[in-house]
Length: 142
Image 1 (cartoon, rainbow, N blue to C red):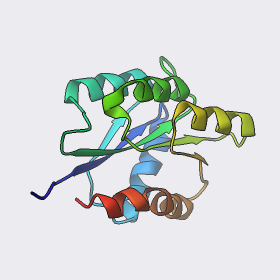
Image 2 (image 1 turned 120 degrees about the vertical axis):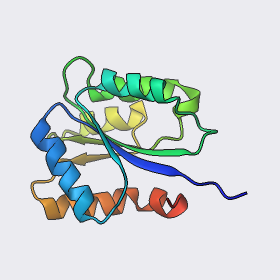
Image 3 (image 1 turned 90 degrees about the vertical axis):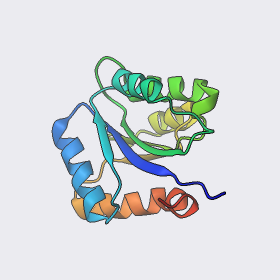
Image 4 (image 1 turned 45 degrees about the vertical axis):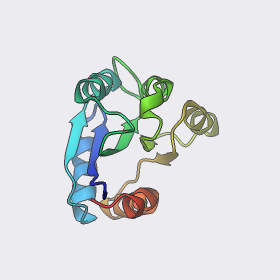
């Protein structure tokens, strides 16, 4: 039986301008996937819980999470996601303006699959998304 994945991007960033820029980059990268947006980690966790995201369901989410947010920051959010066995499979890309090695190490140790410094141009965003998400997009076509 063929599995059909409902692939979606989830953008979590408290800055509306950054979310807009991310959304534009995804659309320019010709990824016709739904995009869900949240302004902090708690909203994301509430949504994942409400949506009933589990590994055995036909869902495939790609999370892009900012580090610095109010209410629940990105590192805490990733730690909560990775604490749930049924969310272990969800790929997570952390984005931040910081290029600090200690923050990058902390994000990866918390369970992020990758960490990128926020690009300064739409073209750079498109390249980074294609490079980071390509393995999941190829493995789990929509």
